Amino acid sequence: MPVYGPKINPTSIMIEQNKRDLIDRYLHAYNTFDIAGMLATLHPEVEFKNVSGGEVNATASGISEFAEMAQQSKALFTSRQQTMTAFEAADNDRVSINVAYEGVLAADLPNGMKAGEVLKLHGRTEFEFKDDRISRIADYS
Image (spheres, one colour):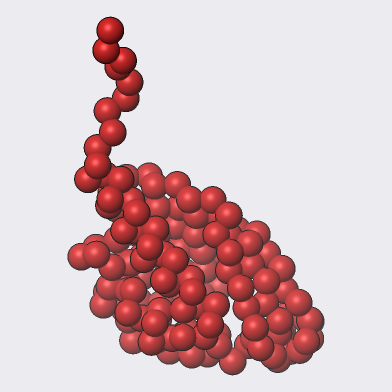
């Protein structure tokens, strides 16, 4: 007697794996301060926003603005690590991951945190894709 179950689409699995690989490359480049490596994963028209405590505190539109923001952000930390703790593909164009973040500050921040202190956050990042590149990143913490 044949066994029936949900159909598995190999193409869908490959698309999901390609997106996960792209996100892994992006995170590795971020963690190692490799801005060129980060940019290599991004669509030229990338949109970025960071939302902390319900408020948008950083945005970039296009790869040039993103590169400028990434360069400024690089100077704020002596080390940083984003670790993917969960991965969920919403459809062929969207992925959401949970992230554990830890960074050691290189400079004092306006919120009172001092250089050398460790910043730890847990959050979610949503990615969208276009032309086999990341076209939108939204960080929520």
